[in-house]
Amino acid sequence: SSKSGLSTFNREFVINLAEITTGSMKIYCYVSKSDDRDREDAKKHGVNLINAEAVPGSRDPLDWLKVPPPELQHPHVIISHGRKLGTPACHIVRAAKCKWIQFVHVFCEDLGKYKKTPPAIIDTIEENEEKQKMEIELCKAADAVVAVGSRLQQKYSRSLLNVKVEIITPGIFGMFSNESKLAVDRAVVKHFNVSMFGRATFEDLSLKGYDIVANAIGPLGRNFELTFVGSSPGEHRQVEQWFLDNTGVSRNQLTIRGYCSDPEELKLMFYQSDLVALPPRTEGFGLVALEAISAGIPILVSGESGIAEALRKVEGGNTVIVELDEDADEWARRIREVSEEGAEEREAKARRLRDNYRKVYSWRAECERFKGMIEKVAKNANAVDKLDITIDVEDQKPAESNNQTTASIVESEKYQMDELQKSSAAPEMQGSVSHPKSLQVLGEKFFLSAWKNYLKTTPLQSKEKRDEFMGFMQDLLGGTSSPSVIFTTDPEKEREETPKVVKRQKREESLWNNKVMVSRSKISKEGGIQMVQNVPSCLIIPSKALPTPTEVTCSIWHPHILSPPLGRNEALVSSVLELACGSLSGTKKSYKFNGKVKLALSHSASDIKGYELGSKTAHPQTIL
Image 1 (tube, rainbow, N blue to C red):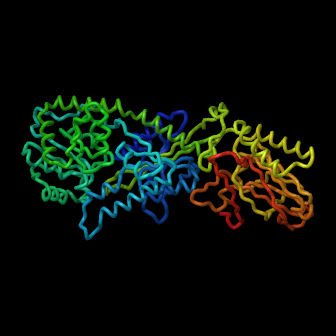
Image 2 (image 1 turned 180 degrees about the vertical axis):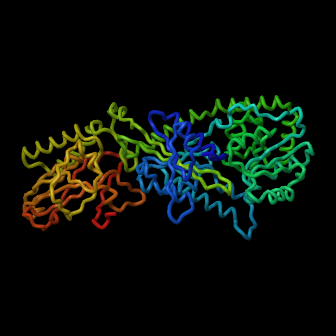
Image 3 (image 1 turned 45 degrees about the horizontal axis):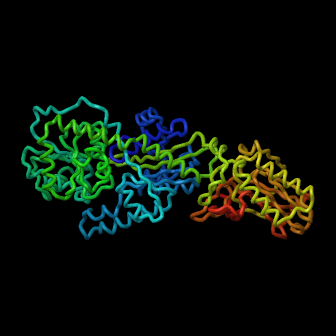
């Protein structure tokens, strides 16, 4: 991203995460639009950009991001930022059947208290209550929730019952912290300049507290100037008039500039300021203040902001917090105090604050913790060899911008199979998807229980059958590399002209054809057992289930071609099994089973707690 505000957070977050995960994960940014400069900058930091394809009939980039990128159709975890990006993330999650981490940056009910529009137009409190409900819905649907800063963590922890809200506190922004030789000649400049940065949407002017600082500057006299950076194109005069009508600042003291999205230009305006003020009546975090801290510029921030919560833990941080946040007189007093310090003293204090902030909140430490969050969520993903993680982020943009929206994707190069091979503990079961342990590790706890339950219900009638069954189970323990499937059955057989024998070593490359036969055998009227070698399952056909000696086949369908209907809280963790039977006489006649046919899976152990396995039927008409 090349924009400031939230985009600065996204850029630093992705770059630092890429550095932390070098060798274990690849980082992608999924963007609606990028240019050569963006791609070169991303590549330099080990990040890959993927452009979303435009959706016919839509000019909204958020619609484009609802479709998984062709380059990565099957991510395992998607990470989204805020309400706007949460919905596209949900679309990808449902399409790709992956996990989801949701970031929260605002608490809408707080914003609604201070947004101002004519009552006849809209009730901002009611409107923001509804927006907050949407935020909560997204958080509840996600597998994990992360708040930016402790202020939001506290608020969402109260709203999300039985949900652990994690926290990420952003570190110093590298793009602003590079030392610059650019500086104002303080020996010549006599006036003291206070700058505010934001967006001049008229309903937000009061919310952001711009009137508070303007009322503070007015009485301080002509030697104090106020620069507001944030007007939309064509609205500079209207914004100026709002300040003149609603505050005590004079036109001579006030300068209005357009919203700035270029980081280099933003840095120039930081260096032109003697002080940057962040005076919101409520603010989830306040990234513009952190940008100023990163640039080494003196700041004052409202006590009702997330950045103030973070600064209270930093040495010297309390000295830049205005606790009487709505008191213009208190702001005036604090601004005058800063102005009475020498320029060198102010700049030295600002640099010390930056250094002290970096000691408490480092991107490396925050991204290390976040990497742990990813790995924790990924334990529930049914992935053995790869872990794909999609991170949605939201951009701040001026009204005239190209509506660029970005997302990031993390792809693990190597799942931690070495650690899994070393472990001998029982498998950890969470939700409805098992932790991907190797079958050698699962064997004693998992398969022995399945064998016991199977043999209780279906005693083997001969030594040959017993030897065949035991050989099959031993083969499973020694040769299979993935858990068994959640399955559906279809009694109608779709016969294949040429029988196929699929060997285990070929399964991975052939599984993704539409349908692959994995087992075929003749079953007499007396019934029998059919071992399915390529998936850990065993078909038990009772006596008289078939009217005549019959060919029984088991095939694997690609789940995108044939899949059962899934509920909101259900997931298909692997492929679909089709069981079918037909006459051996060469006719096209097929049969249905006359009795209850059992398919024993490796997941049939009844004493595994905290795990829920279900089966559903997929009918031919469900083929997509």
